[in-house]
Length: 183
Image (cartoon, rainbow, N blue to C red; front, side):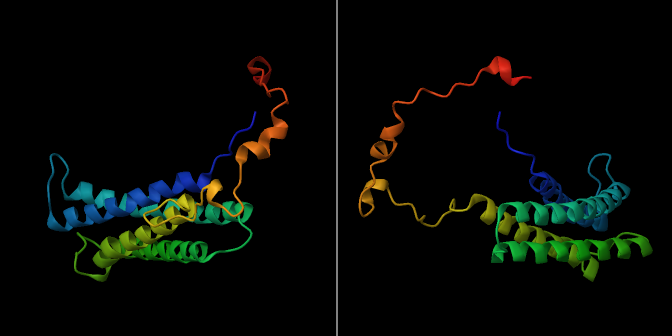
C-alpha cells in the first residue's frame, strides 16, 4: 500500500515557530516583573531560557532536514529556498548569541537593549520570514492573487477529458484486497 513518508522538516518547524513568540512574551513579563497566578519572574526567566534553548535545539535539525528534503524534491534552489536557508542560519546565530548573553548575565533582561530587541523583534521577524517563505513553497498557487488555472474547455484547442480517458473505460477496476495488505 502506498504511503507518504514522514516529513521531519514540516514537523520540527512548528516548534521553532511556537518558541519565538513564547520567548518574546516571557521576556516582556520577566522584565516587567509580572505575576500571573502562581507564575512570577522566576517562571518567566525559566520560560525565556527554555524557549531560546528549544528554538536552537529545533532550528538546527529543522535546517538540516529542510536542506535534505529539498534535495529529494526539487532540482534546483529557487529564490524562496535560498531565502529560507539564509533566514534559518540567521536564526541559529541570533539565538545562539542570545543564549550566550544570558549565560553571563544576572537579573532580568532589559527590554530596550540589544538583547530585548533581538528576542522580540529579531527572532519573531526571522520566524515570520521563514513562515512566509515556507507557506509560499508549501501552498504554491493557493493565495490571494489570481491563479494560472485555465479550464480545459477554454484551452486552444479545447481538451475533452472524457475523450482522453475513454480508452481506459473497458479495463476492470483495480481492487485492493485489504486482507492481504496487512502482511
